[in-house]
Image: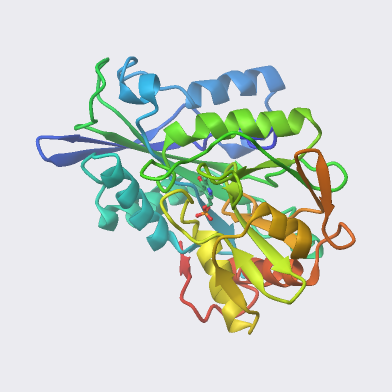
Length: 363
Ligand SMILES: *Cc1c(COP(=O)(O)O)cnc(C)c1O
């Protein structure tokens, strides 16, 4: 992911291997000196220690994940709360999507009921050694764009093998780390329409699989090299309808007041932030429609554009470019609907306003 998204693992790692029809689980403590002592280490030594924490010795090197991208993952955050505690946001939805992804890749799925207790243990143990950020009132001034959270990354890894085969004996690994702002933005955030195809019908676009990310990485880096913040994919058949960003869903506010986001088919990733924003919009009586939206319609009618995802939150774009043509949204700053969604979502996630949806679960 971006330059702001290095992975400096907390000192615990969960590993579960599926064999003989059951999951064998371990919670490993990784090399560490405790958060306090690490804060005072010199950069080179710390970097060695962090590299050791992000290495793994016991898993097969040549396998379907390392060779063919046959693996899936989740990304979820634990949010520091205004009252000093930590809380999950819709973690049950991550457990369900991880299950769906593994089934979609024809692996024995990870039991949903194990997911929350494991993440809870992983984070609590790290917190006990002094890791994990705590709430900072300064974040309120930036609508939490500057907030630090805890990012948890569960993923699968296959058994040894070089043939083109399904993974029958997956290993599930979960790691966690501090995470700050996602996009490295200088000036107006901008999005470049890519001519690459991220997902096609009957494919894997709906699965959070490693395989999808090769194209996303290429397209995003093309965009960054040309001075843009993010890339935007169009549908594979017509190269006409907007689908999503490299790792985020997209919304447009139109000049008639409607908000449109591409409908979920099998080519758009069912984002949990996307789903949450749809709920918030309808509850605030802002008309939200899930339907196809062509790039022409974006040029003709859109006045705001924002993307959603666990890592990006709600992130506005001031400019879009397609085939050399530029589209400017509003006055190139966060528009009113984007701002309302950003604030409401962050305030729920960090425990500033009532969570009437039961989305927030204490750690
Ligand atoms: C993870 C992801 C999203 C966002 O999903 P959230 O559940 O909101 O984090 C969107 N698009 C792609 C391709 C993704 O991998």
